[in-house]
Amino acid sequence: MENIKIGIIGAGGMLPYHYKGFTKAGAQVVAIADANTEKAKTAAAPYGIEKTYDSLIRMIEDNPDINAVSVLTPNKFHMPLAIEALANGKHVYCEKPPALNASEMKVMLDEAKRSGKRLMFAFNNRARPESQAIMKYIRNGRVGAINSAQATWIRRAGIPGFGGWFTTKELSGGGPVIDLLHMIDLALYFMDYPEPDYVLARTFYNFMDNKNFKGPWGIPDAASGITDVESSCHAMLTFKSGQSLMIRNSWAEMNEREVVSVVFQGKKAGGKVERLFGRDGFDETSIDSCRLFTEENGNQVNRDILVEKDETMGRIASAANFIESIQGTSEPLSTPEQALSLMKITDAIYESASAGKPVQIK
Image (cartoon, rainbow, N blue to C red; front, side, top):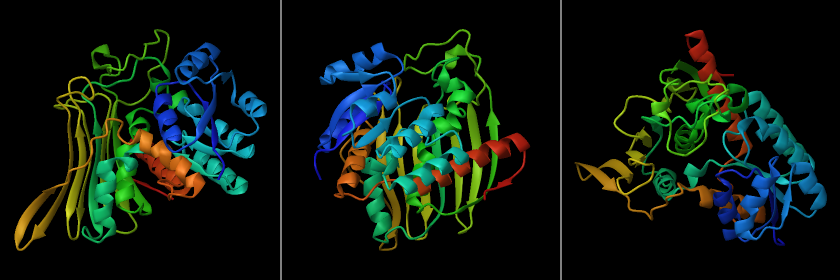
């Protein structure tokens, strides 16, 4: 296929990862759009990108030869921008979460089918070396059917600003349930995305008014902004296959340190992919691990799987996979059908927490 040309909509913090992944796979980023035109120009300058715009449609109209669009905006705009790009015949790579809810995701899925274009999402943890190493054991039968798993992304103090779009439900869709859904997705990926059945969840709002629990990313507070999302969630999810998944997500919760992990128990072996963050995010005190728990020759064996460290947690590799899937050189790491299932689970978590009882996912 000829050189793939990409336009990026949104000039936020994920842009460098997307740019590096796309160009690593041989694509060319030709334009950046952002409602804040100065921000778009500032983001484009380090990469020598001359074309910047204030909207997606202006970017597409001025560059009809663009093959694909990358969406890096606040969550509220994922669906309308993805639909606009797909309707104009462009492949779409969109940051997580896929949408605000399952209804929006269904519209995106239908448009992707109608257009015949690729729709993928930045579920970057699937692309991590640790995850791909574990998947080789799962696919070759060493693990067996996975009975249960535990998906965890917990921060002791990690609220991403107060009053900004992250903490405004209308813009974000929710707090850590929807923001930190990476480990839920990774667990489902390991489990072969079984069909969900019931969920029982509780959400908590502690510390959402305490700025001592702000994260270290420098996202400015908005004094007149809204803070109406949860700070933490605990949930139990069952599947029609008989499998189960425990979920724990938090921006602010009393815990020793930030833990990002999926642990699973299979019929032949268990396993774990984990990052323990340090004092200031990823630093010299951080610990990555990838382990298999099995039995060999009558002995209980814990196997450490050594892989190349990836500080980006698969972000560059995930973006590269999008290009490779368009080129037909790699299988896509994610599908819109999986994204719809994930959003149905997210919706049900919030519904169960609100109702105070189990919810069946349909």
